[in-house]
Length: 302
Image (cartoon, rainbow, N blue to C red; front, top):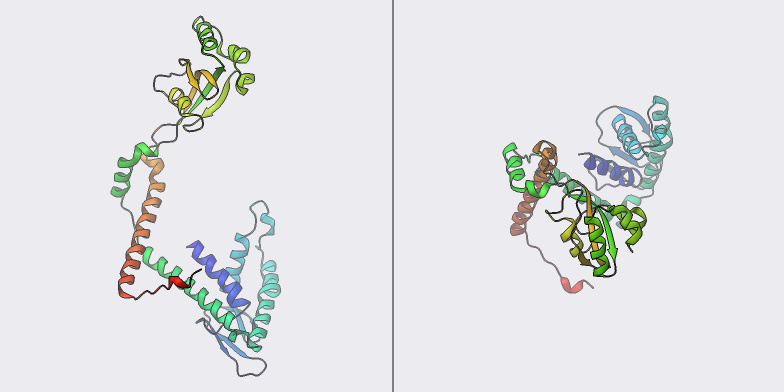
C-alpha cells in the first residue's frame, strides 16, 4: 500500500504538478488560445490555496509532506517538516510555485505536446496496472493450516546454516603431519603446534580460521570439518587438501537448528501470500491472453 501511495504521489508531483495534462481524469485543460487558461481540477476535501485557476487541497499538502519526510535520512530527523509554520512555508515555496509553473505551461499549450501526451499516457497505463494488481491481490489470504503444512514440509530446509569454528595445522608432507599427530595424541597443545609447525597464514592465530559454513573451503576440507564424527574439542585424522596435509580441530558449533514455527510464521505467511498473488496474476494474464489478440513483430527488433 505504501509503495502504491508513493508512486501515485510521485507521478502527481512530477507529471501532474510540473507538466499537467488533459489526458488524466483529474486535470482538465480548456485552452482557447487566450492568456489565463482555465485549468479546472475535480477536487475533494478542504481547499487551502488557490493559485490562479489551480486549487491546492489539504490532502495535496499532506501527501507531499509525507513523501518529503519519507525521503529524509534517518540520521537527520530535524530536516523533516513537522510544524505548522514549516507546512505553510512548504505550501508557499513549493506547491504554490509549482502551480504557477503548471498554469503557465497550460497557457503555452505544452499539454498538447506529443511527447508530453505520450509520457502521460504511459504513466497513466502504469498507474492503472498498479491499481488493477492491487485490487486483484488485496483479498488473497493464507490459512493457518497452509502455514503449518508448509513448515512441516520444509522445516529441515529452514534451518539456520550451521557454522563451525575450526583450527588447522597445514604442512607440506604426510610425514610431518604424522609426527604432529603423534604429539597431539601424547597431549601436546594444538595452538602451540599450529604456531610452530603450520605453514598456513592462520598459524599466527594458533590455526584459528574462525567460524565457517559449507562451501567456504574445498570439498575435501568440508568433508572433514563438517563430519558428524568430528566432535567439539576433538581433532580430525590427517587428510590431503589444496595446500598440503591438514589436521583440524573443532572448537565450537553454532546454528544448524530448526527454528520453531512461531519464529517462522510471519515469514512463511508473507512468502505464501506472495506466491498466491503471483499465481492469481498469472492466471488473469493467461485468461486475458486467450481473449485478446497479441501480435509481436520480432523482425523490427534489432
